[in-house]
Length: 188
Image (cartoon, rainbow, N blue to C red; front, side, top):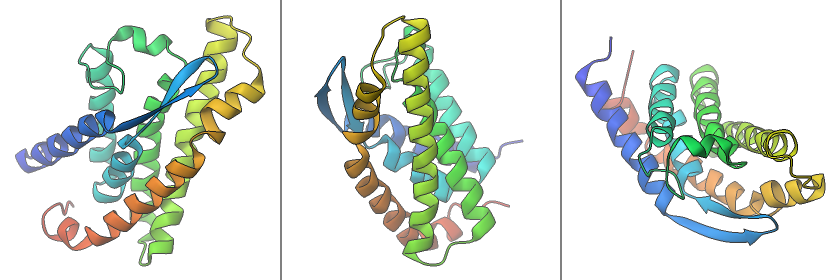
């Protein structure tokens, strides 16, 4: 059962995820606009600050609320979002947060390098989820013959450098939040 404190902390992180959706840079790419948001930053922070169960519940709640129609994704919300090729990146936030949480509690990072390696593992799942979903949606569901090179360009090349920087700063921030995490957000 969730304690009131856990629900409140999940609500704070959920709010940060929503705010992160609106802090964005839109990049016009072939076939659609890609958004670089602060959601990757927040999902890494969630993974590094919360235990696996709470981080996954927080991010699943975010996805569920957006799919149910709350305008909390980068360009809105609603059930139709599942049919968008970029929905895989939203699912990637969940995988990223879960991976970061799992590795954090398994490896007990001490240095910025340790945190960054965990963040990169989470970011890798984020990209894998986004690219695979984009490919499947465009090729098999939307029946749009988008060349693989364009998919790699749209989903990876355009955003890998900014997302790597975002991941680094999220890891630095999580490392600095370590004392707060232990005293305020400590869960057993």
